[in-house]
Length: 169
Image (cartoon, rainbow, N blue to C red; front, side):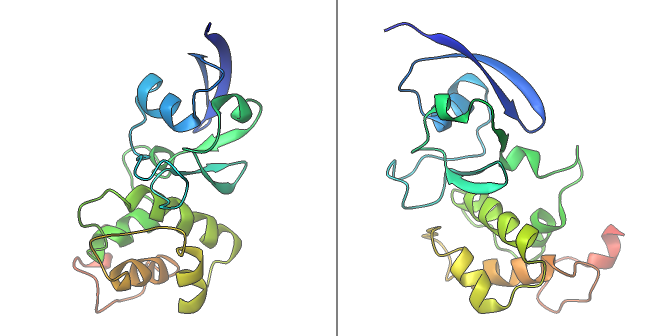
């Protein structure tokens, strides 16, 4: 089988890459483009560790062929930050201790980011539902849900934060 060249729009950059017809987007992101934030865990699309955005919607990159992504706008967890400045959501995960081993974190961030783009003030039930397709083996999800809720209003004082949000301003 021969590789073919495709162009992918990833984090607002055009990337030319050689792929096999059966390469998943996750394989290309990690192995060809060195974007290792998305993780492979289950390989069946049920754990959420490989979640990325494709045209603004959360997608399991382990189930998506790289060829399917041609002509779409892809955003990975590496694209959430603005240069060296973390997004409010990423900072909130740190402030709330919502990151433990880190394996699920990129998928949780991408799912939460998609939620907050569509619903900037979700209630706890909505946050839990949006994160329902993401499995974390380390936490009880409480800190993750708190982090997402606080990311809606990062300027507010928060008794659960491990760092002072006012310091970042």
